[in-house]
Every structure is written in structure tokens, then in C-alpha cells.
Length: 322
Image (cartoon, rainbow, N blue to C red):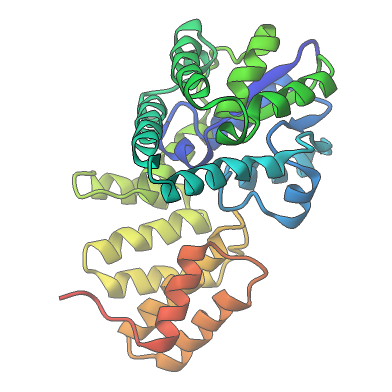
């Protein structure tokens, strides 16, 4: 590999960006062919214990990619636990008599950052001087107001140590604000434009189905999902049917998914079992539904949303809202 590649993780916001989704990141990594994948915003403990699952879903795709290609994954943030200090700082402000005005300022920062994350993003946009300048302006105002310390999760200190540990080769993935600080140190490593892949197009369609909205082209989504045909795609097709009130068609699809290997991505089993239980409840098959709900809670890990659905289903049979 001739140069370092530095890529931002958008956490749960990849799902909003057809041109910078999880498959885009994998395509950029495929083209770079790194010998090592560095995780700038995670510690060895977080990786080992799976503490990243609720905050950085990109790793659901990155880690299997690296394992399949024999690329070592090296977490570099030895002080990642300090990220939690930012939330502690906000909680302390909430208890202080004069903290309300400061919290309002922090909420304004959150909204400004959210605005950047919700604007259309591509690899070349994320590497552009314009985007980095806007991000630097937002983050710089926050750090100036509240200090580079507990309020920021000691970000500058942590990323200085990460930067010192990085060789100028391999691929580096960092949370967006960590990426900003590393981009200032490694400007030659920023992402460039690339030709979209078929996998990227399919991922964009799956992501659109995950955030299904009333104004979407549901028939077009179903056509695309059936063409993809993976367990995740068929699960999402069942979601579309259920949203349309066609629970029997949804159940038929879920029966098909249940006969497939639906272990990947790792967030899928919990959702599949929880929804399968609900559809079985609608069909009057309470015993099978209970087994599905218990299956969610028996998994080594499942998204909290799926676990909440399972717990609710164990208490009361699922029914559609009138």
C-alpha cells in the first residue's frame, strides 16, 4: 500500500448516505488494499467486549471484511474510556444552578453537527477543504467555549496519542470529530472520489428500507429487495408488508428468512426473531411466538430495540394498533 487512507465513521448516520454507506467504506478499503486496519476511536477492551455495537454500527461490516481478507484490526485509542467524560460533564451541568445556559449552547452545537451529518456526503466531500472547514468551525467553537478536556472527552489529547502511534501506511477509521483532528495531521490520507459499486447501490436500498417512510416508493423498494434476495433484504421486505397492514404476506416471508442463515449482519438475528414472534402472535401461534421472543433474549447480543420488543412480547401477545 503506497499511502495511508483515513476514513471517517459516521456511526448510525451512514444509513442516510447512499454515496457514503457501509459498502462505500468497504469499496474504498478494497481499492486501498491495506495491510492493517487501524481503529482510531476504539480501545482493545471496547473491541474485545463488543462495547462498540450500540454506537458504531459500521464495525458490523468492517470487522467481517477484515477477517475475511486476513487484515489485522488494531484499535489505537488506549484512553477511549475518557469519551464518557463528555456525558458526565453534561450531567454535572444539568445539576448546576447556572448550567441551563451552557446546556443550551451544547444543544446548539449538537444541532450544527447534526446538520453537517444530514447533508449529502460522499468520499470526496468528506475529504474536501470546505467540509473540513465547516466541521472545524463547529467543533472549534465548542472546544473554545467549554475547553479541550472533560467536555470533549479529552479528544485532542487522545488523538494526539493516536497520531503518534500511527505509521504512514495502512487504513485508519475514526469517529467524525476524531477524523477531523487526524485529518489535520495527515492531509495526504483523505478520501478521494470513487466509482460507485453495485454493492454500494444495494446497501443504499437496504438502508432506505431500514428507515421506511410513508412517502417512499414501497413497490419499487419491494422489487429491489426481492432482487437482492439476502436474509436482510427479505426481512426488510417483510417490514414493508407489515407497514402496509399485510401481515400474512410478511409472515410468509419471515418463514422463508427463518429457513435461511440469517446470522449476518450480526444485528439481524435479534430483529428477525423479534419480528417473527410478533407475526406469529398475529397468526395466533402463541407458543411459537414465545420461543422466538425467548430466542432473542438467549442471543449473546441483540440490539436493545429487539430485546425490548421481545420482552414486551413475552408479557403480552403482539397486536396491530387499531
